[in-house]
Length: 107
View 1 (cartoon, rainbow, N blue to C red):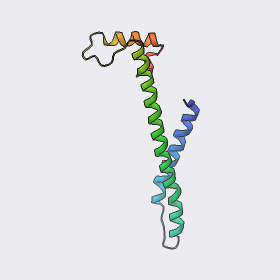
View 2: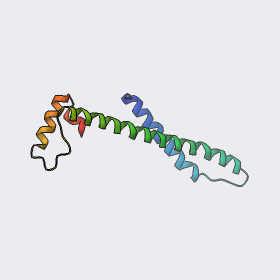
View 3: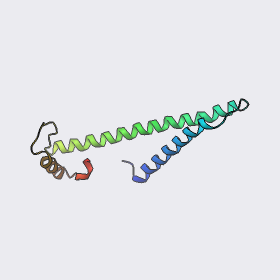
View 4: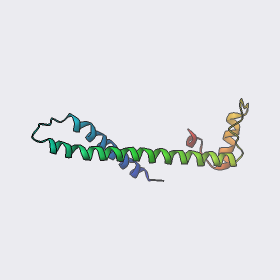
């Protein structure tokens, strides 16, 4: 799991890439520097692909974390598939205590 500083850095880089990709099309381009404009668009497109890959990796990591947490809760006795469970909050809290997972982690 990446450290908070690494996560902040990746968010900062994603924001910078988005800023560059939004600003590049708005820059004026004359016929004489069409090749320069195309060269300026290439890094913006590449950074856009990088941010998409970063978002996909972040989603995949978050999903894996939630699935691991759910697996721990199920191993501790929690059954999420029961419909209209009258003991819902209490049995979830008991499983969280048994699994060592804090209540704030599942929200």
